[in-house]
Image 1 (cartoon, rainbow, N blue to C red):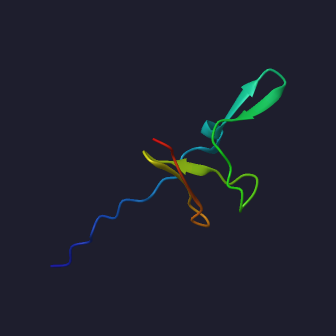
Image 2 (image 1 turned 30 degrees about the vertical axis):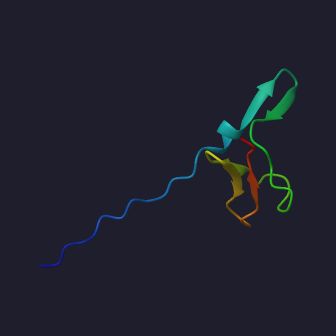
Length: 62
């Protein structure tokens, strides 16, 4: 009896959800990582902002 485990594949959010077009300019909706540079956004958690690439963390003030 060989049963295969079902593995849920991680899906990255679409990159177009991080930007907004405001007239002729482009607005970034999320904060970018100061260590990694442009194009690497910080994930928004309940109490912090975290970079998934380098682990940089900014804690939100209460």
